[in-house]
Image (tube, rainbow, N blue to C red; front, side, top):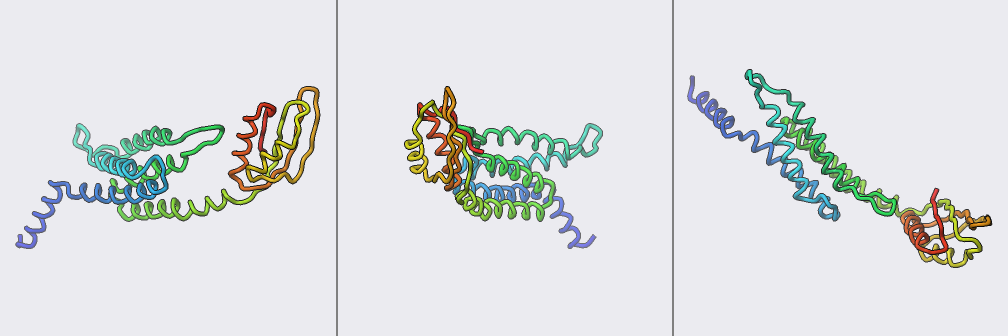
Length: 230
């Protein structure tokens, strides 16, 4: 064996014994999870920098462990078993970031990001660095570029019908003023009187987020019994 071959074999043994391959995987996971977490942190989301780093790091470690885990007979274990448990378990973290308030749900993007970061960690842990880097780049692209586009779509002007049920003989003037103060314009109205209530069928136009705001403010009025957007 030549000196070059001996040096190569020594380096390979050193690389294996010190698990430098695992160190490389964990380092890449910290970078990718940190990049995605930093975007979430800047956006003010609950799952920020440290959360995404830890998820990606732990997923990588578990995937590497699953691949290298030996059974009692010396055979390599099934890599899919621990990976499947990671995918299942990450749902608990994702569920913790989803919040519900007044009929609206928030945190779905954070939950989906956590799931994606765990998948990236599993990919890196399996040794697929190119695939992991590509997936992380696409996640960052979706969160940053698509986030701006989504914000513009949400802020766009829409026309939406509303069915408003109020107490009998309720005047529409104060209700219309409340809608206008919320940034909504009444472009069509039909009134139906019943013995116990008065129903207004409305067509409203304005910024998309204001429909939910106006509905919640209407429901706070004592003379408004129900308000539904269609």
